[in-house]
Length: 106
Length: 431
View 1 (cartoon, rainbow over the protein chains, first blue to last red):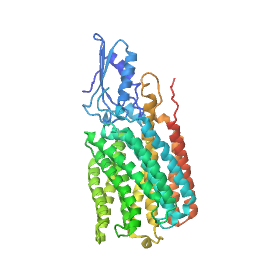
View 2: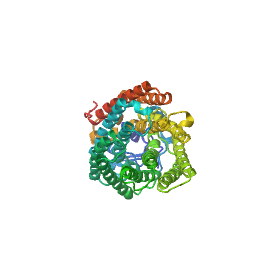
View 3: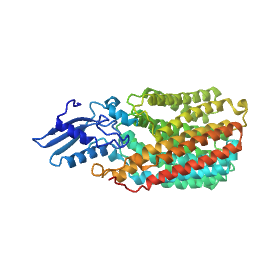
View 4: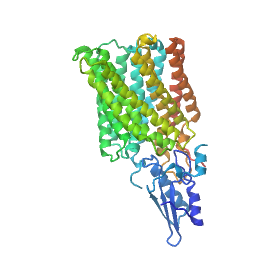
């Protein structure tokens, strides 16, 4: 599932995730369309992120996952962070944002 | 950690890096040897300097880098860990020592069997056999079924067949087990080696990497599947008719036609990927790869010309063969390796130095580990050297061949410097 609407708090998380680049292309994972959902539960103090990769064989795949996990744990130390790697729906280049496309060809 | 990802399948840097340390040395030695013997390019294609440079390029440079890169790429393509790193070290040790004897044998080659041939050939066969076992077991462990895997597994088997055939040729010179012309076996050795091993492998790896690097999702995999059948049918036919007497010429003609059709399909696959790419701006690695693919097209044309014969085209014996071989081995394979080095090696080095730091500190990106300027410089010098060689061969001008060899030496040095800088990278933290 790809989340369409984010709360104000979740948008802040998305902004944090923009600091995580795909090391191969140098564009952040949000603008590459790799972040599918962000759920921030302030009562339970949980932060759950669903992300995908451009290809299952991505050679830096778990480095990206590790990067997301670490940066969220550092930014939200009181939250329990879970990063799920999902393959459905399959990522396609159409998911790259306009900003991402611009950066890709800079 | 999540299952099915490739980082944890990545091999140790110590398995990959030695190949990238030794490969550029062979490239430099081959270039220097050619510079000292550039006049041999205007002679018949089977002579000692050409065979020395060819084997140094094919084994010491191209195969060496392919071994190193494959240990890194197999986890990406097959989504499984390499079966044994110990076997990879054994392969490297056997291969390097075998190469030493083999090159010594070719430097003094006078169409006779020497001890250096037997020792070198045997060591290389053992090394390749170990490599084949390692790759095949890895492939068996992988549940992934794709066209890349098909190509890679087949190419590995052809590599084993190539080196066995190479040793057979020199042994047959002395013992004459099969009373056929030396050149017929040589032709098969070249076809299995260049087409069965190198091209099949390149196609297999490119099938995964080109769309991945250029960000393309829907690719013409059907071109590659058909290409697989056509190229295999051609190579197997060429191999089989070597051992049969009085086969009509039309059979080998059809076999070469099958191989060429497969190659054209591979070129069309790449054309389609390049036309539909999301990443319009090409980095230096992909620009070099694109140049290599253009040279491959020229090489295909040259191989077609080989069939018409030198005398028909007004060239002395062996000229078109040398041009076609040079375009394929130096132009295509070297160009592709020069480019793809920057798409593979920085990652394993980056993972080694920075994997544990991501998210905690700001780190450089893999592309920051090499000099883009140096890579661009050797891209131009490489293209220039290919042009000079081709012009020198077409117009029989030694001075152009000498300048081509100088540009080739320069290319190998600049590339080597960039690769060594990457391997001996000092960890940087960006503040």
